[in-house]
Length: 385
Image (cartoon, rainbow, N blue to C red; front, side):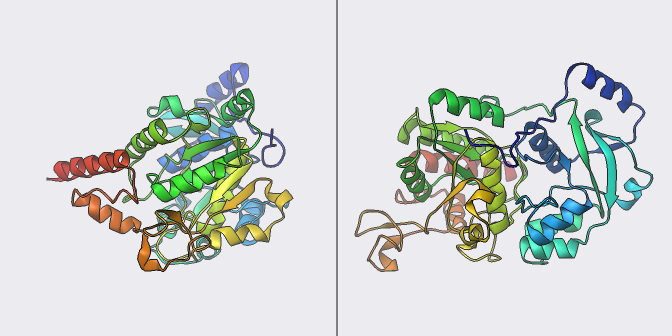
């Protein structure tokens, strides 16, 4: 089984006497209430999804990640994982603090280190822009101006209220892969319903791997992204009808989307390495938004690191379309026909069709998926009236 990033799968969930002692002490500690984003980060740290991180980044790790795409110890890491509070909240915070959600203590943040980040520098390096229209930049501008770093001990793991059958921690997926005898496991990251081009590249990957982890993000996403509940219905319909049941595992990823393009492609790959995957699909504009990143920048960034540093193998795929002459999915690598023979719709165009109650063409979407999306759009439209 592939090692977790950094060599050890982190577990920051405490139990027994240690948990009892921390809970008893929590009543005397200053508190910070977590928003949904921070709560998902705490969970990902706790279960080892963000291994080797044992908590929120302090100043040295944060600044190294922003500029060098590495932790202070040199290990590859491309996205800052930070806990932001206001300057007023940060005053007087030292030692340990209690992290709460709806008033319940979730975790203890140990030996708090507070620092003031250069958010403009962070935005420029991580997102390649300071444009507030970028969702990642907009979030940076909205959160507090002080970052708190420190190791976390989770005493009350956030309770899962949705998708219970699909909530598998890294230790769970690793055990499941081992039971199935899988040695080459490909992961597919998604925040969208799966269309025919996604299906094609997934099945290409399955030709060379023992199994696939279909691993959609269910944390915070943009407001115009398809809701997680609708997406999960789409995934279930596809797996039931078009995939071999013994070769695909559907599990949810509690993390939130950063929309960091190339940097987030590395981040997503490292997370799936922690879940036990050996290969990772990188398609067109991975984790992109708008026109902030080049079409294949998320593939090119892997060349900046050695395979040993990343430890998980990227599988790069070109932009796919349905060719009416070839009568199948193709890319510029495989099809000799001109673009006018290709059927390919943007996400915006697909949303426009759905909002009008028109299913996307079968070359783009399986009918079961289209029906779910049209029904969801109609329900949303009715609720808005």
